[in-house]
Image (cartoon, rainbow, N blue to C red; front, side, top):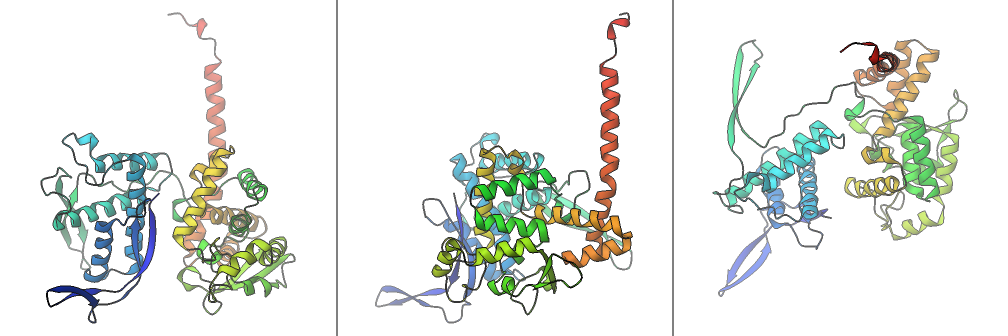
Amino acid sequence: MALLEYIRFTPMRECIENGVVNWEIDRIGRVIERLPQIFWSTGDSWSEVNLWAADRTISVSGSDMKTISALMKHLCAYADWLEAEGIDWRHFPKRMADRCLVRYRGNLIRQRDSGLLKPSTTTARMRAVIQFYRFSLVQGFVSRNAPVWKDRMAVIRYFDVTGFERTLMRVSSDLAIPNRARPGLALEDGLTSIGAEHVKNLLEFTAAEQLDAIHLMLSLGFFTGARIGTIATLRVGSVEDAMPDPSMTGLYRIPVGPGTGVQTKFSVSGDLLVPRFLIDALRRYTYSIPRLARQAKATAECRHLLFLTSRGNPYRPESFNRLMTDLRRRAVRQGLHFMSAFRFHQTRCTYGTWLMEIALRVAGEAAAIAFVRDAMFHKDEAVTLRYVRFLQQAPIKATIANEFTVAFSGVRNRNWNSFDA
């Protein structure tokens, strides 16, 4: 399995003295913190793609590390596929169906159609791979005569600020995958909630397997709606200093956002509403032997974090993704087949659906939306409104499904022998 690592890149330049080439630090160059780099499962560096990441970071105007990291995550997924299939990334035979990019495109489409990848992710992943290959063609890493793809000109029509229609020409390839969303109402990030029975089965599985850290992370997602970025930056002090909510018995408040050290999306400030049983479980975990063993390995600046990896490091996107991949594989082997397509962010969707359902029982739509919006730190109220529409459509869909089932059963059970041929 390919690895995505982050390094501190210090630019160097060659210096020739007495016919000997020496390397010294380039005083003009810029040091790059957390430059993403990909390594094959053998430990060897994928030099070409790593050069692309460094070149894009240095030379492309407007490229920030978040963009570069997103592109490299897509390339890491491509590297995983190449290793799994045993294909070289420069494999472009005459037969089109055997070419690495054509086969990878088909794999992405199959994952999209089966629900394992969002349509937007599928499009972005193929686009990132093509961007890298364009760089490789220019640098000569891939022969310019190789049958990589066929370019075509795409015309984009738009209206300017004065209302006049304009056209924009851009180059596209025949391997590009259009972003075609699947029909149906989705909640956040194109995901939906999971059923109460699945929540119960998943938490029972993680508890039985003694997967303490991921069990508590999932519990925080299901019962507070916190994003993984917030959960991964929770501190020991966050749990110890949690205060009971004066107006809601059995709930505690944990301050998050700027000034607390706990990250939130868009740096929104607020309080997580945490059930008492979960606060008690978090406090027990804080001083448990497994967590203290991880804390002992951590650096001084990380020991305050509630959740640490087995090596004592903070959970970053790449390490958490590996944790979730292992969890999915173990759960599916134990018969939890719904986990094959499960994403952690669905814990948040599940919480939002459950919270909105309760709020609508006791308050009007406007009050329910306001409460859920604050509880889930939504920047835009339109996101909260999706939960209302989702709940409103659920009984309609269920009724239609039942009616179709009854109608179909009636037709199926008719005595077809009564009809003459």
